[in-house]
Amino acid sequence: MGFNTTLLHSDRPSSDTFGATLPPVYQVSAFACDSAEQLEKVFNNRAAGFTYTRAGNPTVEAFEKRIAALEGGISAAACSSGMAAITVTLMTLLSAGDEVIVSSGLFGGTLDLFADLKAFGTTARFLDSVTYETVSSAITERTKAVFTELIGNPKLDVADIAEVSRACKEHGIPLIIDSTTATPYLINPLKHGADIVIHSSSKYINGGGNSISGVIVDGGSFKWSREKYPRFGDFVKFGPFAFTARLRNRLWRNMGCCLSPFNAYMNLVGVETLGLRMERCCENARALAEYLSGFEGLTVNYPGLPASPYYGLVQKQLGGKGGAIVTVRAGSKEKAFRLINSLKYASVATNIGDVRTLVIHPASTIYTHSSEEQRVSAGVYDDTIRISVGIEDKEDLIADFGQAVRSLGEDR
Image (cartoon, rainbow, N blue to C red; front, side):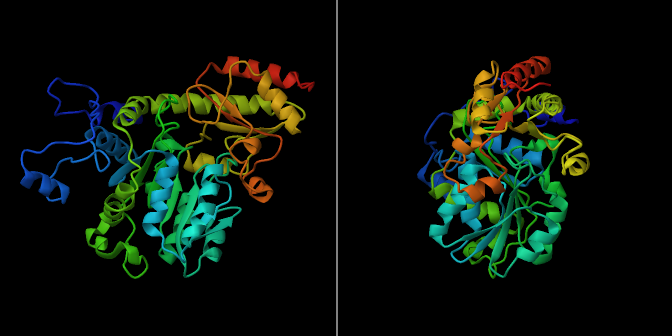
């Protein structure tokens, strides 16, 4: 089956009495068992079933299975947000004194998280670019993971997963990929050597901008050991499932970052059109980037343009599609604000991955807590505009952005 057919037909609900085409919403806190003995078995993982929605829910499980299948992973754990997914992933495998190698071109909230994790004794070593060479030279005996976004948001740098994975495997550390901006439609990072994939499923997976959520997919490929990862303890006996077992039975459950059943249901509805939406969004993003590149006074960044240093990697790794985010430098903060405020169709909002086109001035919003050095490393300047391109007719988007640019007094 092709991607879109798989989305619709690979995981049909089979146990629903009424033949529902989507899993029902189990909007409950707790699940009753027939006896105290049965509840004891379920509670202690000796029998299948559910006890409490914080620890598991049928609707949430259906979403987890769908995403695990899309990514080719052995299991998935859904969370209340993308930031929760990143947090519990890192805290599951890191101990005080450990280091993690990180791309500097990260989403502002993720940068803030790494600053917060310092209080727990962990160190993030930021690299301007995550490549085989830079990762290999940065790894020390304290390094326990490499974390990077596949397509940086909003830097739009693209990681060569196979090459970065090669460096990780040579040193026996896992590669964690945040693939939010790429989605399973463009690539399955696990097939290219990643060990864990994270999505802020609030974005393209949901698609409608109606539910906050995150999801962690375990590839089951990394061999966890007590010696290097002492916090895993007896969980190593689960072999390929060691990470998932420790995650679900410790941090994920105990921190209470569970996804609500209703939000899981909204994600299940949204993900069925992921392929159609991403095809249109990528097509629109490229067309808009090409159009805006023709204006004097604008600097356009889009990895799917031939002028991008990542163009060749986009062709090789992402099937020629550069994602759905375009960034523009307008020349000054004043011009950036004027351009944003002149748009008729784009909403001024902080999300990405909506069916609607969204614009934001990152420096004054999502990077407001970052230092000047961090902003520059992330490709964020005072005149930067991030455009999350939606599914509108591209002719309307081009006309709208054209009039907004011309309002700045620039000639095409």
